[in-house]
Structures are given as C-alpha cells and as structure tokens.
Image (cartoon, rainbow, N blue to C red):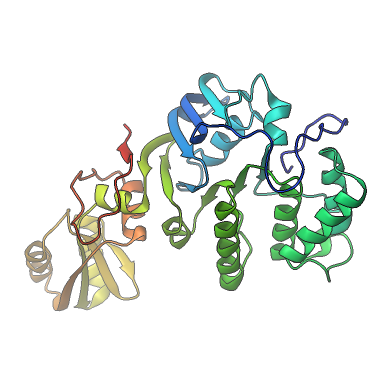
Length: 347
C-alpha cells in the first residue's frame, strides 16, 4: 500500500502546498547502517549499509531475490529489522512510524491501489488518510490526474491496463506531496515511451527537492540514477555513481564473431563465461585477451571472423558483478571521469 498507515485514523496534516514544513539541514535523506533481516529459511538482508543524499535519484540495482524490496520495507518500518540503525529524513521509523509515513510516499511492486475502487476514489481515500480535505483535496486530485494523464479512465482500477494502474499508484503516493518517494519497480508494465516520460517526471520531482529511491531491472534506467547501490544475495556490495560502478568493474569487452557461431560460443562460454548477443559472443576482457580467444577457437577448429574490443556497458558490468567476478578498482580516465563522489566498495 502506498505508505498508508495501518490504522483507520487519518494522519495529521503536517504541511500544505509544495514546500514541506519539516525541513532538515542534514544533506542525507535516508541512511542505513548494519541493516539485517532473517526470515525462517532465508537471510534476506545482510549487514547492509547505504545512504541517500537529499534531492537525488538513488537506484537499487540487483537481480530478483537480492533483497532490494525487503531493504526498502525495513527502512520504512513496514518490516521489523533484526539489527541495524535506520534514519529517514532524520527520523527513526521504528519509533516514529507515523511521522515517517507522513513525509514519504511508497509504491510497492503489487497492490499499491485498491482494485475495486476507481482512480478518483483511490486518490480521495489516500488524500483523506493524510488529513487532506475539501477544496484542497479536490485540487490535489485534479493535479495528480492531469500529471499522470488519468482524466479519461473510469471504472475500477483492476479493469484498467497495467501501465494505467502503475500511474494511478504513483498519483496516490504523491497526493500528500512527500519529501521522499520510494518506488519498487515502478516502470513494470510500462512501454518504452511510458518509461521515458516517467523518468522525465522524476527529473522534475528532484528539481523541486524531492528525493527518490527506486529499484529497477532496467539497466538503462540505472544509468539515469545519480547514485546506485548494487545489492547481491542480501548484501550491498557497492555504492556510488553509475560511472564509478563501471570503473569498479572495468575492463574491455571482446565481441567475437566466428563460424560456426554455435561452436564458438560454446567454447568461449565454457572457458571464459561468455554471453551471447545475437550470434556474437561477448567475452569479459578481464577474463581473456584477444590472443587467448583466438588461440582457443583455433584449437576448436572455429574460424574467427572478427574480434572487436569496446568499453563495457551497464549490462556488461551487471553480468560481471552477478557472476561473482572480482572487481578492479582503477581510476577512470580523465575524459570520462565525473566530479568526485563518495563511491565505496563494500564487502
């Protein structure tokens, strides 16, 4: 549910208009130190430490089951942590849950709105939970419907398309103008144009001072984040900018075209963990050199058409990290280096 309190009583309204009354001089919007959570058969989050600066887009990147959703629910106080210290906008979510929920918006992967209610009814319900009423609520509803192009959609939300449902969930999460917006796979079900428009909207929110935390499987979306946390097997392995992540897992990629490509790919996958893109085999340049590749394929009687070396993409970085290959802490070349950031490898 969209950061709504579990009790029936509405939250007291703490601010009006676009500017939150509870401003805080601290530059950190969200932080977690030593966050830990066990379930019956799974250690879901393992001593996770990360921090999110105010006014940025922070991305959680990781495969399914890495612990991203659990970590978000822990920092919001929706789950009780076994260990660790969390601060959200300077507040302790374990001791001040209502204050935290009042100042944050949350959209989960599923069930973020009531399917048997229409969009207007969902927006009015969530608005009232936050103590908004009268003309102000009417204005907020009209604003959100226009922002997310929801004016023409009628009937229960469950009967609408997935993309419309996701937009409706975002509208509900923003009805009270939160300072911190947490989105779990928000572009699931959106087409390419919808995702592009959505990220344009995120840029507008951060320009207005909103902090955004997002989980995503779309690697091109990870490129659009100011900072990233790479989460694998419940652990935060890295935090830094997308460029720093590429640098940490740096190394050229060898794009190998050969004939027959099936035999070449099989050999390169067995020897170097190659992945297939079309009929070209991509080999991690830190695992093998072009000479290694040519020698291996010659022994297998596979004809090499060409071997091209290129810089790694975010997909190459992600595959390298998730395969457990070692990182390579090197300095970025001056031509692509970003302004200094606090990129840190966490082990």
